[in-house]
Length: 117
Image 1 (cartoon, helix red, strand yellow):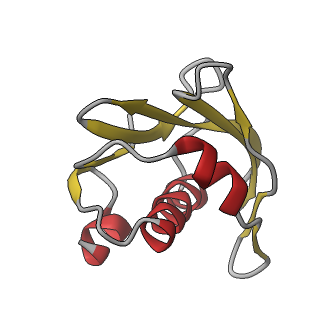
Image 2 (cartoon, one colour; image 1 turned 60 degrees about the vertical axis):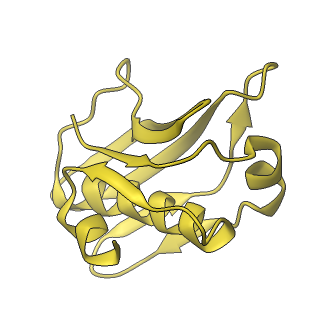
């Protein structure tokens, strides 16, 4: 399962406030334009649309724990792991790094995030 793990817990309400819509048209369509957080402010879901070799709708999950923050595909929506899906996940990871520049990627299996680290 593709994922990005950061070394610290992020402030999820702050991320939600500063969240900027992601929209890319070329070379593949990627759209992430909303964020929903749970009542405990420990989990967020981001509805995502990717159109590359196929049209997929799925959720990206941000899970916040005391010692880390994990970005991954929400398991119940389990899209095919196309390049567009991986790019969408890395774009959310980069948005987190833009808002919290003191974070570091500790684990990832997405090449585009390895380039950022």
